Length: 293
Ligand code: HEM
Image (cartoon, rainbow, N blue to C red; front, side, top):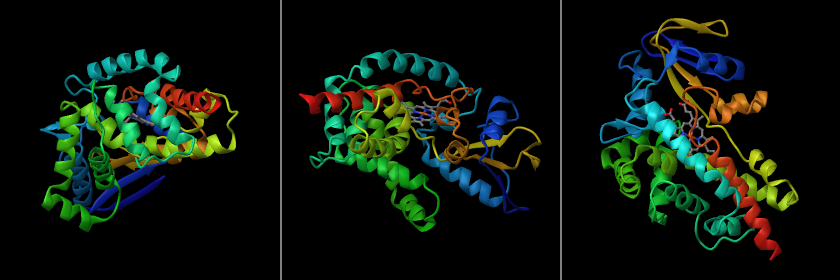
């Protein structure tokens, strides 16, 4: 845990213990309301992330408050729809061949991010067509959200680069902010998973597909929360003006607690918590099957 507090300037606590994260995530002291106010740097940080993760005045689902209108219903519906696709994905359908080919070591001049974007986008919109441009738009989103490089962020705000990137992702996704989140933000975590899977495929091709998939799941680096009232975590007091950064990936690495990956036991659980492992399993199986034929 790390607290950075300079009155009036910044008030942030970074939490990297799985037990603390679980306790906070299960309770009702923190949320994603992101009320305006607080110290200067908190306002700038949260304001920047909210600006990037909003479209046409609507926040992306990962930035919406627990009780925001329609959030929980959308989450449940998406979970049900994605989970119903999981068994078929596990059967390694033809649509996974480009990713399986990449896993086997072929490049074909297309970034693996674009191949993933095609599969993710198709789960939302039939006929979704990823391109080098849509993958570049996802890269812009990832860079806009990465810490640091304030100058580049300022330039992008002036020249509208992030807005243009979102407009492209939105046009492909029918303005669905869950799909924009998946194809522009969550996708980077999955690219990391694919890179890991390619290395595993080289070194341990005899791995059980479900185990291979499990080893390629990474938790998001961090998710943001704001306290609804004063409280404390691990003996560290916080107020409504504190920004809480839940460092999921670090917590998972330290504790090995796999619940950090999708926060599946909390109200904010990822609706793709069954779909992503099934996709990974299908890609692995497809790669093995096509190398055998
Ligand atoms: C390896 C890939 C992924 C991981 C590790 C992951 C993890 C997570 C986590 C930890 C959250 C909770 C965020 C928070 O508490 O603030 C979340 C939320 C969410 N994820 Fe994922 N995700 C992944 C991929 C996806 C994909 C592919 C989709 C869509 C197809 C998706 C859709 C969502 C949505 C819509 C939410 C917001 C749920 C809500 O609170 O209403 N995620 N994800």
